Length: 234
Image (cartoon, rainbow, N blue to C red; front, side):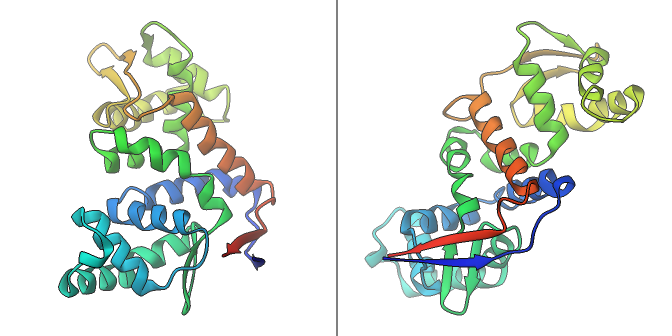
């Protein structure tokens, strides 16, 4: 067994959260999640052809040997043109002519991939999480055991930023809280401008643990510690 290191561009500190947003947004697609899960399981480089067979098998609920040629071809084309380049762009896989391999960074999202299977709409849940401010909202709401007003929530948010409270409140009211409500993370009463409750986290597992894992990725992305991504070739 040999280690192979691949150099990647340094991500500046202020870009860490944005890089995490991009990764979560990329994962808000079932086929991409399946492809990444297969690469994480492989723990090494997998040819595009074999990966397409494995993804098609998972989606059809059959053994890889039972995947028909038409389905295999359709999945292979879709992976080649849409999904693998996107995962490569956000640093979750390393894509070459020889195939694809999950990066060390992708392993830090493994808990999220496992947890999202319990969501009613995994795509919507990950799309909602793909924003640093919305993740901050969830962190604050999870710390209180009673309804919290819009202004009080905005005060908590601005304590971590240089933004004006009124601007943050407007952004929360019109954008972030409705999206989190739609995804099932919390219940927002827009008329009374109040978060009534933080619902049971719609993933299997703990909200705090999953959000913490995401935020650790943002910190690592920003502190320069991910300059080198290591793949283990079996």
